[in-house]
Image 1 (tube, helix red, strand yellow):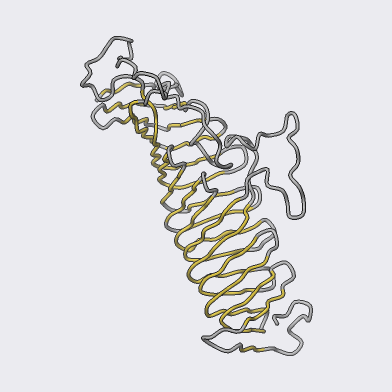
Image 2: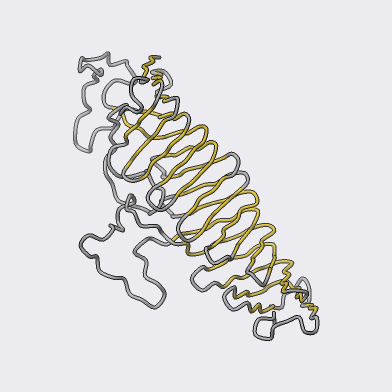
Length: 320
């Protein structure tokens, strides 16, 4: 294990840990593809040859493209870089260029395949941001898992929060919140559940009824996961104590799905739709969060029941 102090500079580039470029899978907070990863730190670099890790302390940063991870401590997990197809393995070398023993597990070129962030974690690009106390980013899988208090992911269109765990899967554009998870849109609509799984559309996905636009010079490259565009949510699935809220209406159920473009949700299981003092109960419902109209559907577990208070319901928005 070796230590090296960097106290004489606020930040230093640590290691030339380059990863090969590859095809883009998603937009957003993705560090799984792109150019070389640069590591910076304020205090010490601890290189553990046996554990194959490098630990950066005192406030550290990892940067790839326009995505940055800041934390009190960063741990980079290293491995020997595999040779390109059809090329022989390079001879192991030390940092000074001298040959090393073939028994040295860390000899030769190294690559960074996992980043662990501890304390005051903040991951961000030009549009999206995430916060937590601890984060683990798997570069191969393109998966980030955050834990701690006040977990949050934000985009220009919405905010995702969770109590226990928050995951971001860049290859499938999937965000997962576990424990009192909530998505809140800019126009005040909210979807809440014990477990909430949301999927985003790629930046170049056309709006309903529109064809894809051709690329223009100077436009953000939607095929690049490090491009500055922010993807929009497509749909969200909720399990356990699902709650949909608008400024005038609340709908609850055991599970449900919400489509953000149409603003229509389907709830299943012990459904309750409340607007003011008016309430409808049943086993299924279609809720239009744009118009405020909820359509109760028949089911097998219970009949549809309703309570209507005179002069309370607005005929254009009351549940059906």
